[in-house]
Length: 292
Image (tube, rainbow, N blue to C red):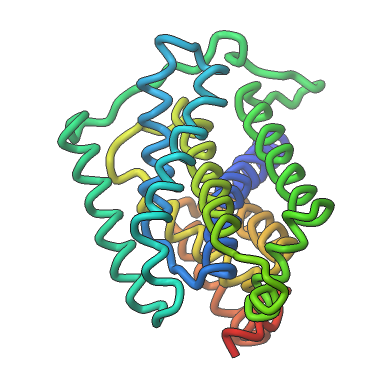
């Protein structure tokens, strides 16, 4: 295998890491703030891809890139208001059962509406083709995907670390009782976090639609990998999830580049096992007082 092909496989692994990251950050935020284990997050990823299929004929790919995640975020707010809000103060096991059922409902609704056969989604003409850097060539669309994912993560970091909204969310993650004593209600922040987290899953679905088949169960494999990223990175740590996603992507790409494609998923589970043996809280997991 040439060096360029090896590097290309590593970049493909990193690409996987970036869209795992968009989903894992949402999973981590919803669980850290509300204690909800959202097994429906993969279904929202699939919903984003289907929304893109619906919206693109009217708005084009770039319009769908904005509108489809917003539509998924609105659905996320409705789900938070109608369902999640009843499970914030109970054992996370109940929310796990709830969201498992919700995932099944969304998947079957997609299958009923669009059929089980995979749908093709055309890549925008502007982003087709390759970018050449000497002898090294790489897909223009995949570079675009990485840029969008990095931009989304950077904006989320700014929101959580440079705004009053972010300070309240971070305080709510650590100890919501203190916010209650100060007369600050977490209710609107829980809805906003659900919208952001589920919207990010929808964005990942739109971005992946041109390079993977769009089908009702497309979120299952992604969800498993995203949970691995959250566990390795550690709950409550933004940078832990970021580092974990990139590490998972690199490991997956490295194993694929060595020619063991079928072992790439097993490799990230092995990585999770090793990390948990050494650091049970994950790489950068924080101590969250209300879960102690």
